[in-house]
Length: 43
Image (cartoon, rainbow, N blue to C red; front, top):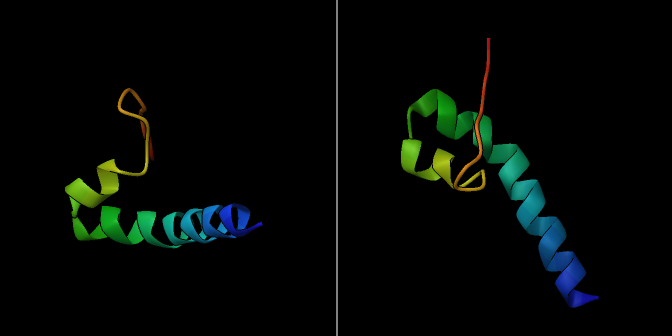
């Protein structure tokens, strides 16, 4: 159960922070949101 809780906390932190990192131009942190070959597209 502890692993599941830690996973949930990590996922929530990612969801809460990815847009902040993108908008701030913090590309190093932003890049941690996806798989190495992942692509993010926005309009």
